[in-house]
Image 1 (cartoon, rainbow, N blue to C red):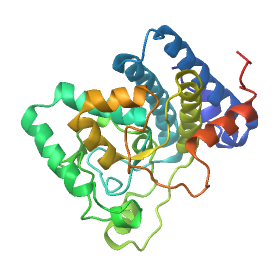
Image 2 (cartoon, rainbow, N blue to C red):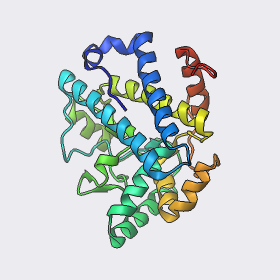
Image 3 (cartoon, rainbow, N blue to C red):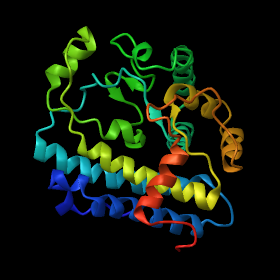
Length: 266
């Protein structure tokens, strides 16, 4: 999946430009359609892995531009933001699970499952899952153990004040100044991908809580992936209601209509 034009990324105001938003959405949608067409013989892990890989590379380019331009203070080993609820696309969950199962030794996977099992039962709300005593189960020695496969939310969380992040985590008394533009661009990319998955694959794209969903995928990957590939719910009880009241399916449909990407147009 191609990246966003760097000249657009240099202008923070461009994310409010409808033409720019349409370009991001449509590029993600059409590239995903091409990849789905190449894999039309059937859904497979490798094909979806390539979709996520291309998306993540594009996001990382955008993040790098904004981090440099806006003075992000995020550095390796700084994990203050890794103590909160993370919502992920089902596609991301399967990509992370496949990576873990293919690369991690059995004892490490068993330990991860134990940590996930402790975190998974927490209520699905931000306050219950935020705090210095609630680290992400994937965090090891203050570093993400699946860094190259981390969800888009984690990729785009950029702060201009490391001290504010630390104070907020430990005392919850300070707002953190975030660089918002990468998150907006990533959201548009994901909507484009999701619309392709919905329209051409009949797949569910509602975001799920990372810990609960990942535990399900690690326990029985093949069954969960097949269920999702069949257009059915693979991650029950892992969904969080969104403030907008709109489902991800509705958001993708609305974005497609606004961008002129409608049924029968291609």
